[in-house]
Length: 157
Length: 137
Image (cartoon, rainbow over all chains, first blue to last red):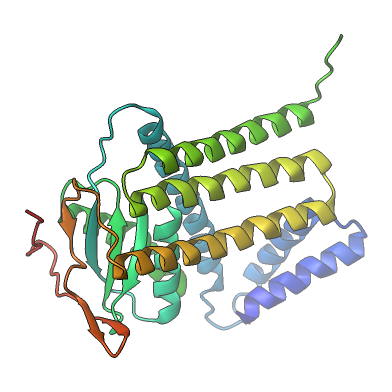
C-alpha cells in the first residue's frame, strides 16, 4: 500500500509540475511514476506492488469481459420468446477466508447478470448463489471458484 | 437540413443508445421473468450497465474534468450499492418464502436457515466438489 501511495504522489507531482490537470495527464504521470518506482524496486524492499498492479488491471478487465458477456446473454434471453431458463440456488464452498474477500466475491457475482448471491452462512464457509442457467451444479461451482474466486484471492494475497 | 456530426457526437450517441437499450431490456425482463430472483437478475444488472453507459456518454459529451470525475463517481457508487440492495431483497424474499419458479432445478438453501428467536442463522453445507447435491423433485 505504501508504494501505491508513493506512486499516486508521484503522479500528483507530475500534474503540478506540468500544470495540466486532466485525466490523461494523471494517467501518464502514474505510468511514469510506476516506471520510476520499478527502477527503485531494490530500495523498496520486496514489495508485491508491481505484480499487484498488473493483477488488479487483469482483474478489472476480466470482470468487464464477464459483465458484457453475461449482459448480452440475459438480454437475448429476455428478448427471445420461450423462456429457456433453468434457475437454481447453489451452495458454493468458499476458499476465501476474510470478510473483505467474501464481500467482493459476493458483489461481483451479483453484478454479473444471471447470478445473484443470496446469503453467506454464518461460519463464512458457504456462499449461496441463485443462477439463471444451470447445467451441472459442480460445473457451476467450479466456474465460480476458478473464475472470480481465484482472481479475488490473487488480488488480496 | 444538414446534420453535422462530430466524432465526439457519434461516440456519445452510440454510448447513449447502448445504455438506453440495456435499460429497456431490464424493464422488459422485469415483466417477462417468472419469479422474484429471476426478475432481479434481469433488472439490477442490466440497469447498472445502462447507467454505466449513459454516464460514460455524459463524460464523453462534456469532456470536462469535473464532469468526468462525477460521472465516474456515479458509476462506482452504483456498482457498489446495487449488489448490496439486490442481496438484501433476495435474502428477504427467500426468508419470507417467496416461491421459486417451478422449473427451478436445485435449491441448496432449503432447510438451512435456523429460525430461532426471530434471527435467521444460516448454516453452511459441506459440498465437496463432485459430491452430493440433492436435486428438487
